[in-house]
Length: 601
Image 1 (cartoon, rainbow, N blue to C red):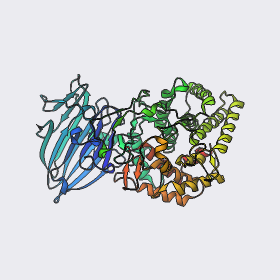
Image 2 (spheres, rainbow, N blue to C red):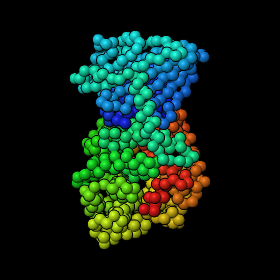
Image 3 (tube, rainbow, N blue to C red):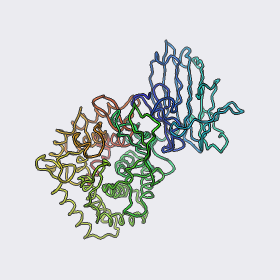
Image 4 (cartoon, one colour):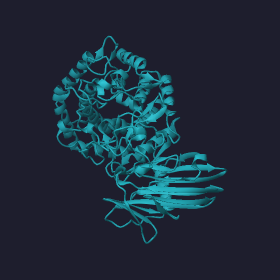
């Protein structure tokens, strides 16, 4: 069975990623891209579905510690057994052509007997490959279009469709293993020396992370989160996946299991703000350019998410041969929410491009023509019901957040045209902006709750209401903002963390069985809201609470289950780490505050 989610670490090469357990097992690896089929899928089942473990024979008696080498995604796991110790170094070399992994076993003290178990199962655990030994001693595994070549410095043998080895490592001894992916019709690639690959990978990450301009009390947390965001970026296109994993459950044993290896438009403004504020203008520009390429076309067909190269067909299907993480079924890949109508994404796109211009990342002339086309469509669509930002799978509603973001679209368009001298229908856009604002204030306010509600005519509260002052819809000192924050504090907080919406509304709202953790981005929104309305002590207290939820190597997942006190949902989650960066900036004097910038837009 897979480990607890917090017992995994993340390594990547800015094109794909692996999840490595503290037991030395690689339980999730998709090659050659984030969204490719997994060749190790034990994360969603067990060892029979593919994994690569290197660990002491006496693992149960071992004391295990681990860390990332400073500013990198080079992972070190140290096992201490009966006074002896060994170190396992894992990384995915930044590729030129060949994707893969390097694993180095280093003897530290005494002698430790180790074992290796390699179970390759292409197609998310469904394809047992044909394995043969090559003339140079390496192993070649072939299954359909995929092939893996393992080079190892130890004697290996096959047992029950598994490759195993047992070997001793003494202090000062180093053994390097490499696994390289290639197309099955091509010969095994020639790769660099594994130790040289580790050194160059560490150097690459150190040079990249040194570019952070953040200076404040949370340097380590901000830098490690920036490294996570870079690791979740698909370098060839600039697109950033929401997480490295698929179908990790929001609630253990539940059915809220989604594939997050895609790029959400909703994340765009938050991500752009985090990257530019921390000094990474190149990455922010690449993200902006991915956004423009992906949404080009008919504005009525804009999607809420796209593939990492801008793909639009993300068909959702169930892997019925996988039992799921801790029996959480169904196991889904692809994402049917791609076909939903979520009107807030128009506001996110226009807002992102506005802030990009503000930061000197001006797009080409065609970008303004695209924005005008989006706005022309939104003029006739903003007052329709939709599925909202939580991607509900029940009936459409007039969600407050969607209407607020429609207001943002026209507000930022007006300001873009005015500040940058671009052609625009001045009277029409101003009137629409004012109409939407009045519409929301009149229909989304619930006088009995003394709060804005999740949707028109509803009494349900929603964490997205915390974004009302953060996008500048109302000023932070507006009494309705304070009242809405108070209502959310009263109804949506569990163990100091914020739920997405009222628990009782869940099944009726999203058409799924009950059960949801605290979506971590919502708690970062509350911390930002506290900072905006002058409650900085409360903001910092909540921020420190969120920092304490990171695992031992500084990673956050999508959610936290306050009942079982463990991380849940897909992992590591970009949106959680974006929230961490932006809140740290909001709380650090003399640093650009994304929340304040957006509120004053």
